[in-house]
Amino acid sequence: GAQPAELSHRSSRHRSSKPTTSPLHRLETAAHCSAARSPQSSITRRRRSSPSSSSRSGGEEGGEEGDGDGEGSGDEGSGEGSGEESEERQAAMVAQLREALLARGYEMRDAPARPAQLPSFDIAGFAQRLASCPPRSVVVLCGAGISVSAGIPDFRSPGTGLYDNLQKYDLPSPQAIFELSYFRERPDAFYLLAREMWPDNFQPTPAHHFVALLHAKGLLRRCFTQNIDSLEARAGLPADLTIAAHGNFDGCHCIETGEPVPLGEVRRAVAVGREGPGGWAELAERYGGLCKPDIVFFGEQLPARFFEAAEADLPAAEALIVMGTSLKVQPFASLLG
Figure 1 (cartoon, rainbow, N blue to C red):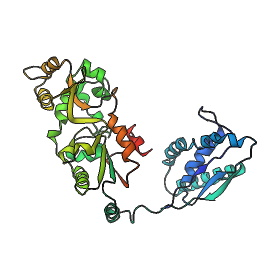
Figure 2 (spheres, rainbow, N blue to C red):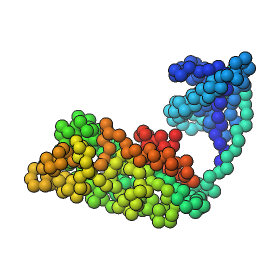
Figure 3 (cartoon, rainbow, N blue to C red):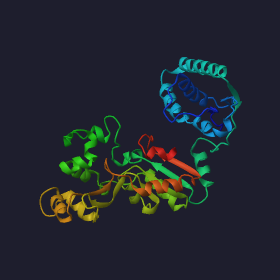
Figure 4 (cartoon, helix red, strand yellow):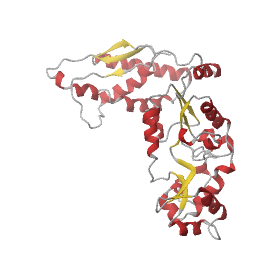
């Protein structure tokens, strides 16, 4: 329940907008990461007086900017080693960094405690927390992991992920199947994949039904999903409560005109293939260009609704549930920024 400690740099000198790479900056950001693992204290630099400090308040704001980068670099290093030896090395590094910072004018201070958000870290504690939430105050962020048990592979898992199993399409790279330029050049590959991944081939998982249950209980404010499989809708979640950041199979359009195309027609064309009555070649001729589901390809913009809902929903969330995603892909990962 205690709030991780902070490293605050209060300086009256104005910082340049250029990235700082000095040894002191690297030391400060590394110490921030290390100090963040200590729950009770933090290090603050003593404010040095300056004749013009009152007119340089921007310098204080600039002094805080290194924190975000420092966290990333610290986390990468924390995975090295294991067991007691690793902990001892880490403790020694923290002590050394603190001594160096204290010598440069920093001082220790206590970090304020933050109330615990869960009564316990188990199902009972989670359920108790949910029961205390006001109506429409729960936001869900979900990714490919919630659909794996439905038989839909995620994208990046070694051996089983989608990108590792696209050899049969003879692609120049796994990502090419979701590139507009490649789709225009060779649409067969995506249409074959779409035939296999069309949502009516799969059933929602317990995770999808859980999100739908949050809605049925009046708790769900919004579900932000990275998935393109439309299984949220199949589980009964209304379209206005689902934000498909990367698009999905709920609609279709022509990539040349941008005009919507009936979903059923595209589904039939994908099933028929290139040639023959109702095939995707005939569909393209009828609508003035290749037609595809409303999946966001590389080179396409995310839906404006994603950004609009994020600004409104995340600050209003009483509880945030993250399922089936490691939050590595941007800009979805920035929802927690």
